[in-house]
Image (cartoon, rainbow, N blue to C red; front, side):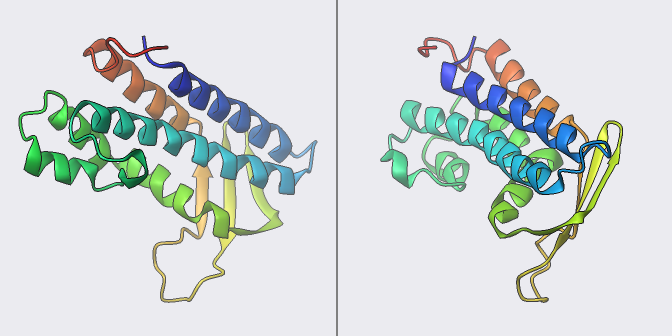
Length: 172
């Protein structure tokens, strides 16, 4: 099993995912609400990874929690190269799906979404983002395809780590 705060983040992501899809449905035409929930969805998904990094920190480097950043695994590799879960965590961090979640989450607060540019196709919602940053910024996605696989990925990460004993002894 894994800690309650991770379960809450996954439940929060599911909640926002369901509402984003519901509001995006052509019968609803509540595109602004869909965008609000998509932003929250990606924040919740990323928080799962943040919680995992916080746990790694508490078991290894013991940095102040406010100093735990995305480069934690690089620091860990230098200072604790024999950490039992390092390879697993590096594979997760390098996974295209987590990189995508990070990218969308990083720019979620900067989205300018024209509510007419959300397209619904059953299990996929396409969100067209208009870049409000400098045109040279190539990181901001122009189109985000939400297909319910992002939540599946994070749930699978947690399940896999749990099965390997990563959360053992953690309060739930």
